[in-house]
Length: 82
Image (tube, rainbow, N blue to C red; front, side, top):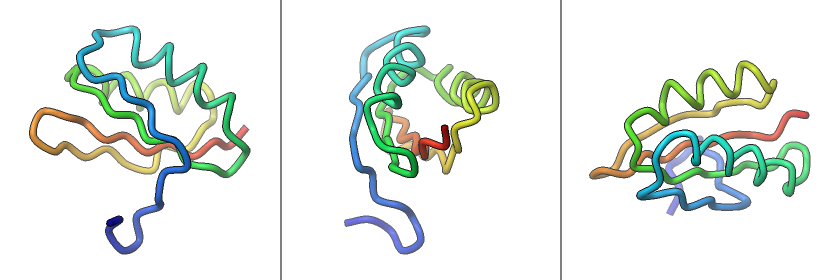
């Protein structure tokens, strides 16, 4: 169940266990397969995913909606903006 005010992901990309740069590469591929305005949720265990996705979203113009961590898994929500 999604938290109030938190968008629900239209697609989930599981990159747990993958090291940099794979989560960024796979996110770049996956974001192109969803519609503009849809939300991609990236699941990753690489601690570098937080700064990597902040830089990636600035560079690509896609909207980073938030990053949370549950146990060892980062949940990154990105809205396709272009």
